[in-house]
Length: 601
Ligand code: AGP
Image 1 (tube, rainbow, N blue to C red):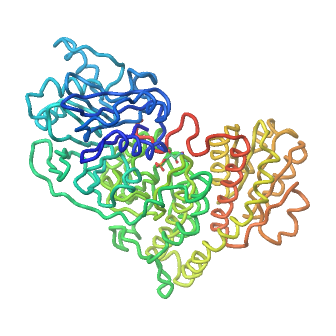
Image 2: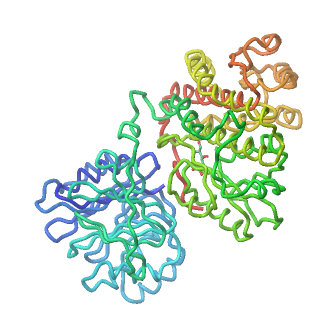
Image 3: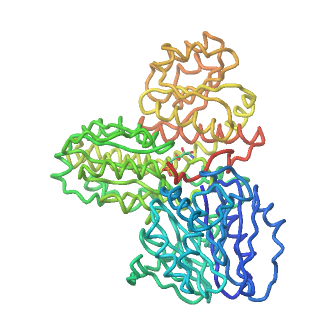
């Protein structure tokens, strides 16, 4: 996904822009560029490929007065990856970087062409540069306001003019954060890019536009009305956004799961009351009156939603519909429905749009997200935050297990409010929940065994993951991880479904990972695939007397309740996918064609 940075201050802009752009690489990109104001001129450098390629074409080091600039990593949406389509886009003395989609760009483009503007790129963003240029009569802020009034769609932008002493930033439906340094302001699409420079940040809100000087920010709405500025102190240190000694962010983040789970639970449980403290913005009476939950999510977050289907039914007597956000049509309006959006980034366009659509029915709504102040939090009534710190690897790991934990907490709260769980039943679940970080740690300690198995099968042309009950969503998640980072075609299947078709794919060349900690039925599925010659790697509960008789290899996971064993199995399949991709020498943290946060439909 595109990333934006900007800088204004006393230092040379170029090196700071490159450094902050590199810190946004995890969002995925195909080209990059910077525009730097130097001696009342703007110099633009662009390149397809990595930031390192851009640095090679950058010749502007060290110009006196070079202390203001903007930069961009582009993930192609309109127009293929090319130097021309890379940002910044310019028009006369104006340069802009943009993240988002200008929906009416074709109309604007026609209009601007009639006025004589020449378009050099195929992007929707270039219209913004020309439109701002059209309105620019010496007041950049006013010109940007006027231009944005004409624009339909989403944007986070940073704008530079050769004759303007300040930068302009604006946002609508796309994230933008300003960081306050010592006589310097740093701008980025995401907080981790700013952490080496400052921990004091201002998250711009939708509809805000700012005049950014080195020593101050003036925040306004598009009508020019001053807006309050909320400075936030980031408590993660810069190290939290670095790899911390691991070869990849993904491995680091897999190992951070005990802490992420502990922090997601912290302060939220009362063992004495046998209940959970969550601010859901709804009374117990309202929770009791609920008749169903509709969950909207994508990718890994969707898999978390699928687990909630089992969980909420059992713990709270609530039926759940789980919708893939991009396929969401229109909610059948049924009162007493709770809408739940799950999105680690809080910025996934498909999820946000589906939630917006669903919300028109006026239903109570909740979100589970990892990013404080992200767009999803503005859409819903209340938010349950997972507390994982930033997740940099494109493959979701710690945010997924923390989502599962947040869902377990929510199911207990719902179960208690609805009288479906007794305090004693809830207490037992909560006691087990507090053991979970230690159990996850024990799975992490099996990393060497998991590595050896993964490396043995790294040459497989196809993988299967099978599970039942709570482990069915985890089989989907295991297959997704194997696909996205190891590029091995993989299927996640409900064990019982194999015989309805996919069994035809099973041969002695198809390793099958059987998630076998929930019940004995999976053993007959293991026998089915073994009979077709497949090797079966079973993830089973410690001391299971039967599994060794049917599986080729057994990895023992600590004994716990079935729903918690889903978290343990997740950690094991994450490690398997990681070590497979590592053996294959693939770019684990930035898999091809993928972005960490998908802010386009
Ligand atoms: C997970 O490994 C994927 N990278 C992807 O499926 C992700 O879960 C999906 O894009 C949803 O993201 P979100 O949770 O930020 O909404």
